[in-house]
Image (cartoon, rainbow, N blue to C red; front, side):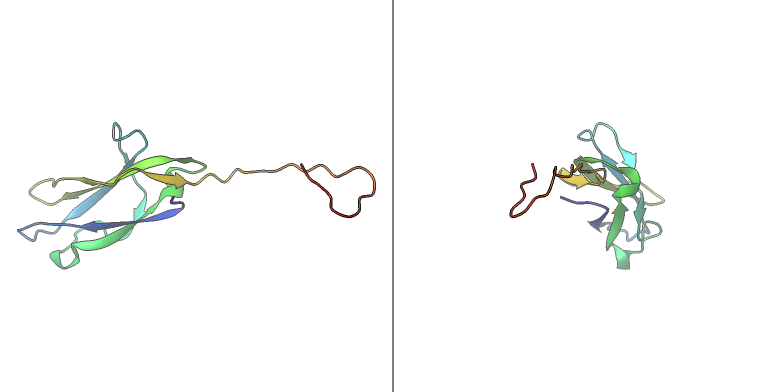
Length: 117
C-alpha cells in the first residue's frame, strides 16, 4: 500500500542517447483512461547520464481522500519520437483521511475496567 508521495523509479533506454522528456500518468480503471500525474523530480531534458532516476508522484494532489487501486505509467519522448510506455502493476493508494469516531460518555460513576463498545 502507498500513500501521499510515491517513488516511481524509471530506466530509459535510447540507443541514440537523445535527451528525453518523460510523461507520468495514472489510471484508476485498469488503463482505460489515463490522467497526468502531479510529480516532482527531473522530467524534462533528461540526458543519457541520467537515464536512470526517480520521480515522486504526489498522489494526494491527484487522489485526495481516496482508497483504491491504480496503475502508473511513464512515457519517454524526445525530439524524434515517442517511446514505449512502461506501466506498473496495480497497487493500492490510501489517501483517505476522513476517518472519525464518536464516543458517548458512560452514565454515572464507573470504576475498574470500563468496556467501550
